[in-house]
Image (tube, rainbow, N blue to C red):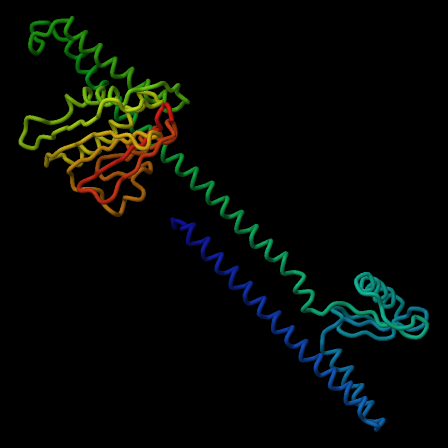
Length: 393
């Protein structure tokens, strides 16, 4: 099925409307120029009739003048004494003046002409009822065409934006569901393993594990499940914010990462934390902030997988109003093709990833904490900056 490129379609429609409008306006300009030329011809015939003493030449000039006026396209109806129509020119319908029905039809038309333009002449002798030129009627339609074109463009734009937002929302929810399934998978698999161990006789269990040891491990997995559930519960609500120490938040994150960062292999990863004391506190939710930072650090760990390197987390105060947290790694950097959409759901640099971690971090930092997360340019490797408003700002 052919996928519609809405930006291209909208741009094409806009160009078509613009081209049509320019063509239509140019045609009216040409018609007005023709009217100016026609008026010059009328003036010439009048001058010729006034200047000649030859009666036949004057009559010829009058007939020429009449022809020019008829060629202008102005609708004309001539009525005599009693209001009966005696002649007409440039009407867009045919009528028989010798029939009563024709007289009623054309007299009804003259009333519509008179409503816009008072007739000229003596009603007891002859009156001329006239309408607007075709060019003038075209000019009157231009505002309606413009308004219609703009409304059509706005309507299509509204539909496109709405459909794109719906698609983005569906993508976000799909990615969120996958992330939830991924995070639940590890503790659930562990619980399934412990249940299998429990079903074995004590003398057949690996390492001679006792029920109490297994129960403790099951309790740890249940705590992990509860923590995951709490995280996703908070991301779907407006959580309460409290005054937090950035130093403490990063310290808790460091403890969580301690068992997940490879250190003993040749491709080890070094974690460096530089949080100076005395930083202003921030107003936030600790569970969500740790989650946001964890996603960024996991992104750095993935970048260093198989090659080793260093991850640096450091914080600084900016102008007394903001706290800047930067997470830098010495990996290969971000592909330029995805830099601009790195925080969108579904965008990932990993073949097996779902691209929800950084999207969640942006939602937490910007949506919940009114901060800012961005990928910084001009640094070796990859550097993310998270700015959070100071609690006392």
